[in-house]
Length: 588
Image 1 (cartoon, rainbow, N blue to C red):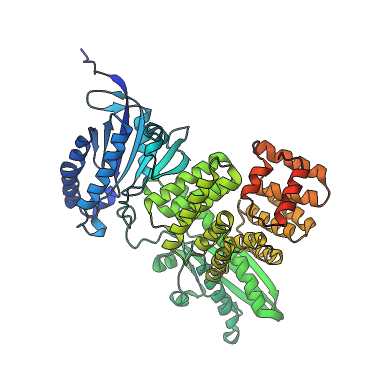
Image 2 (image 1 turned 45 degrees about the horizontal axis):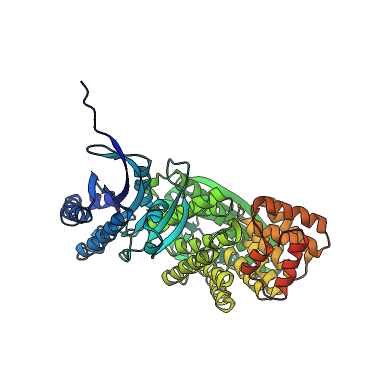
């Protein structure tokens, strides 16, 4: 006869913990890692849980599951454990230091004699993947149990998606002050996560030593431009000088140089014209990703080199990024890096619909969890909060603004030389703090660090427009569009160019660019607002009213008076802008 297992239901707080980089640490030193983990379990983890009134219901190879009567007990236990673990492992070398991610959920669970089950248990187990090493994540259900008097130190991360669960979960991070300065175990030391590329010497056709400087100059410009993009790792020119022969084996070159992509080409001078052919190849597959041809008048050689460089960067960077995104999507979740998460987050962030926006937040949180010192992860999180306030809609705009600035500050502290970090943080300072002087300084540094960064040029345009420098705003936005990737983000660059033309009084051009941006992505509310104001300025009020209704269908709670509080334009531009929105029929 089958013995029935005693089963009952009860509400409980579930603490889930997982050791960071367990597989890698075990591979590197199996006996030492196992011995350390067993010692921590017997001397730190089990006693700490028992002291707080908890019970361990499951020990896995790299973690545990414990239950408590109250959410407060579980949180106090988790904080205590993290602090005790930090103290117990302080003598370990950085490469071998053990840390845990932890999460707490509160829910009704199924309790059996030797285990617990239920959706609430699954939520706790999956929440911990969002925690930083040494950090703690809690669900909204836990926060409800704590009450208003015990919510200090909580950071609202929004609604995050969980694997194999249709509904997102409201998630908060709780600072424990024990987060390690480096992530250990998940990423091997010395591994270069960014896509790598080598630009081989271009061949002259026909061969002419006295004219080889044409090809050399072009290659030097391309290497310099690509190297200024922090999302690419570019092999130095001196490393590729021996690979410019007639026969090119991209597989062998990729292995010898340790690069994923190879760009090569040829140059041919004919009369007063120069013809350039380029090929971008995937060295792992041995396949050509893209092939292009450029030609121009030699009357102005340097301008021709500049135009060819801009065109190549504009083509190469997006195609590399797209192939990297496909690779990241195919990567098993347990093998994702912070870089992979950023790629996927950006794929969702600029779609600007709520579901994609929530997925982007989860991926950004994962990136920070995998590598707390990854500046770009913090920078894009700052931008996420900016979009939340300006595009998606925020119920707590002041708190979200503070969160954006907080992540911007962290990003700048971690890497103040990265062009993307400088540009995104500059926009956060301009949009939320109205600190235009500091923002412009950050943009200037971003452009100096990476003259080929479309993000730096376009965001600089926005702030120049806020301050009334509309002519500079147009020039910078035009450069942003010229350099912008040929993907879903082009609508954003075009929208900022439309805004710059509107501020300059070029309403016809503003209308054309705004219409193009809206056609590319109808979810961009800032483009709809620009189009509305532009139509009114052109006295095409009926068309403005149609776009206003489109905006209200997407954002039914839009009110001009509420929007005015966060609109970064200065007077008199602001007053005219708001009046034109009102004239379209948008409610006050």
